[in-house]
Length: 60
Image (cartoon, rainbow, N blue to C red; front, side, top):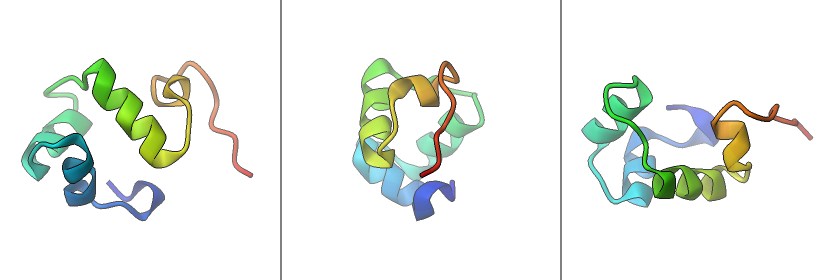
């Protein structure tokens, strides 16, 4: 994944799923749930709108 220095294994731990499932979600084979998007937003310190492409990522 490489986002914010996180590995897919670390993201999987946060989302309570396997690394393989995270890989499939990142490639679009499986959709992220609303709860997972919220958890990722918190983990990455961005809004869910940024993850959904509705708002630009502001780099500080």
